[in-house]
Image 1: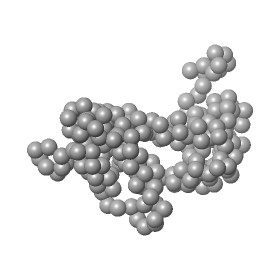
Image 2 (image 1 turned 30 degrees about the vertical axis):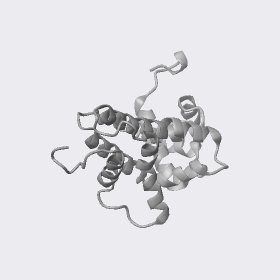
Image 3 (image 1 turned 45 degrees about the horizontal axis):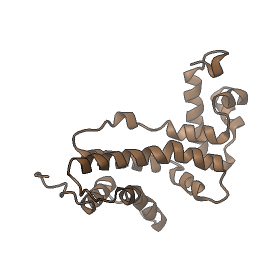
Image 4 (image 1 turned 90 degrees about the vertical axis):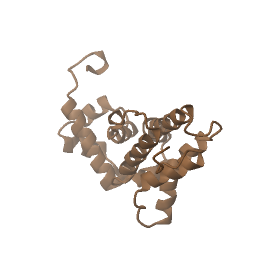
Length: 198
């Protein structure tokens, strides 16, 4: 890949190193205290090189988080319920990483940089919501869920209950992904997932 149509090819090893260091700095210091200069130094490159790749601090931070996605490793199967559990488990792993929840809190802060919020929604929130909705739409089209099932509310419930639990405190429930998927699946008119005849 060539930067802006000119210059030397980008070094994917440097890209990966910068993103890894960025994630560590986010976890250790949070977004506000994250320093692009310190990241560049630790990654063995320059601030200018980082900004050529990611023009803003918000761009760098959200790119680092989005790079953790393994959505391509979760292709759709003929079992939408199983797909739903896998997607929720991937969400659980992501939100449980160091500083995962605090980044969500940052997004809800009225004083947070608007560009950061927009990029976070575009790169992290929207793709996840799209994947969850697509799974439920496939299930509805296959007559596995009620045709009038409210998928918009369901998508919010699927991840929203994790945030509610975190605010209430205490450890994550065992088998959170499967239990959440089952609750919402049934609420949408789906058959009991534990029933072999479903």
